[in-house]
Structure formats: C-alpha cells, structure tokens
Length: 178
Image 1: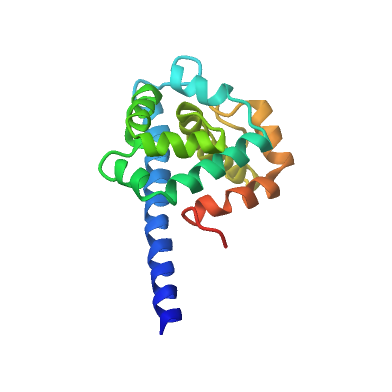
Image 2: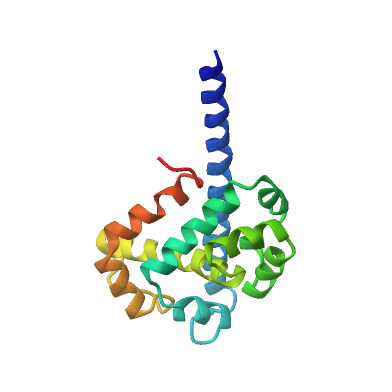
C-alpha cells in the first residue's frame, strides 16, 4: 500500500515537473520566435539575441545548467516564485533576471550549482534555440544556421550532440532523473 502511494506521489511530482519544463521551454521558444517579428531583430541589432549567441557553450556550463535546473525544480519555494510569472516570459533578459533575483530560493539553488541567474536565462534560450537548429539541420529542414547560432556553438553541438542530448534529458523530463 505504501509503495503504491509513493509511486503515485512520484508520478504526480514528475507530471508537475514536466508541466513546468514545457512552460519554460514554450516561453523561451516564444521569446526567440517573437524576437525576429519585432522589427526583424537579429543577433547584430538586438542585445539580448547577441548575448545569447555570443555565450560559448561548454560541457561544464551545460552540466552546471542542468544541476541548477534540477535544483530549482526540486525546490517547491523556487517553483512557487515562478508560478504566475516565469522569467522566460519576460520581454528581455534583464527583466527575466530581475524575476529570478526576486526569488531567493531560486538564486540559492542556482548558486549551489555554480550558475548565475543571467547565465541560466541565457543558457535556457541558447540551448533551446541552438539544439533545435542543430536538430533541424541534421534532419535537412534547414541548410544553414540562423545568425542567432554562432559557428563555434554550432560546431560544439554537432561534435557533442549525443552527450549534450543525454545531459539535457533530465531537463526535458522536467528535472527528474530517469
């Protein structure tokens, strides 16, 4: 009986994580998708897109990002901060960073993983956009990368695709391990 209750509780927790992950991913995709529609912003004329593009990916950064994400998703107080105002819905990185900084539990969770709030937001947008672009190119859906994907990051992701996908699996599963 206890095993069934624990299993049901774990299943419910995973479902909540997935909803939060999908919300965060949708918000980041919306931010990236909406950016070009607002006066055709590019990485050259939009400081947020430029910052996202210019951040250099590394396995260490991705590992710290995943650890920070998992810490926040495991922290009910951090999740509660973003229930009505996810930082990924903010119109700029600065405003998203303010939302994160206004949530001490989330800041503490990120700090414990070695990630600053701004870096977390930049990595969220970059990983979603860049990994999606690499997947699209691998599938033949695009011939070249948009200007929001740096050649260095594209090469890094192409060379480390399987490792990066494996690292990001807990994020795609809502913060829980398999």
